[in-house]
Length: 260
Image (cartoon, rainbow, N blue to C red; front, side):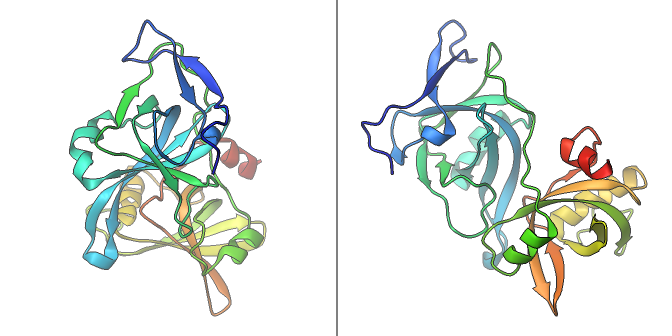
């Protein structure tokens, strides 16, 4: 934990709330634990509803992923009691400024970033979109793992991973009905001689059905985020999680590299 006397790197930025005044903010790597007068600016790259399936799927809140100008990713969490007032402020791809939050240590299980901290929204937290003279931030960032790393992480539940691969087959029932949430099994080629099964569950399976309905995805290269690697009978497979998104755009560098 950094000393409260340690200098905090800052950068000037204009926000929607302070259109005519430069306001300092902290980088993700300079954040300090606790509740204090810290502010951050980052691109909201993804967000999703989080449920506790050990408690009948109770809604817990919204998980967000932010990327800053130093290419650092941190996740944030909006608890259920604050989602009604803050959900409308969430727009994937926008650059936002956060003020009045709590910084806590990240749980050691199911990590979705390499950062040691998480930003927790509290009643005083404010989120504003940055419209003018914001920092230059990449559009996205992924944690793509190769087969050897996936095998090391398998069955540990320590870190979720992103993977890129070519769809070889899709199996499941009612595949053209995107209201269905039953399991889908995608056979994915992730390396020259390595093919794994990816199991899509619940709302993620429904989302993928919607993508199938929109067009044929066979032989397509896809990037999947936040999958959980497992080993059973010596065979690696990947489970979707609530944070699993799908990317098919060949302009995504990780997809372009795989195709090339």
